[in-house]
Length: 185
Image (cartoon, rainbow, N blue to C red; front, side, top):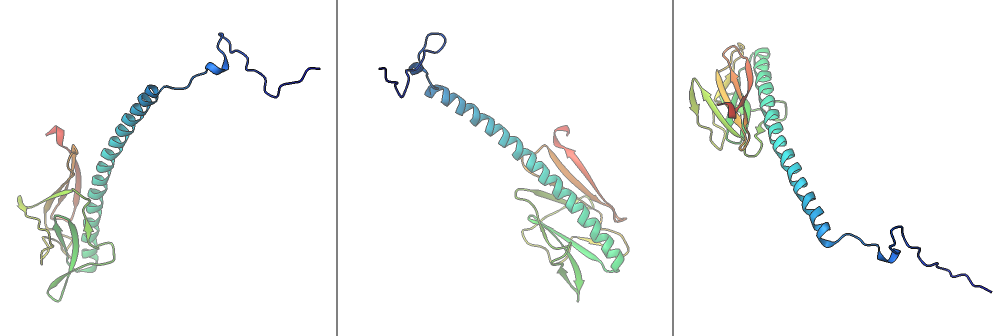
């Protein structure tokens, strides 16, 4: 009587190799794949980070334009002047309260901080205005109750980006935003 074996012998694979001769990847092949994946990951990370910086700069410039425009409209509707002050780290809006400029808190005109590494250059009447670390006692710009605005220009940039933004405020209360390609200059 013939007994069956619980595990049959492996049958040879086509081409004459047996199952016992099947091989996996060598260490060198695995290392090559890991290096390729690492290079691809670095390239994607750099592309996303660069685009993220440009998006942050665009968002900040658009926000500043919208808030300055809003402040000027609010000044005209309320009949009260609104001040605008800049520092190296951000900007804030303020109102005259008993001969003292008091910053707005907790609403749309609350103080704003620039993103890290953003540089801002403010000019008024063609002259550069030095931006300090702390807010000045009196605002550098005013949105008047009459609808007028102190004319100004502020340029916003991030290092290593080929694009910057310029906000131009005109005496009639308009604030224009323009993107500037640095490579073209």
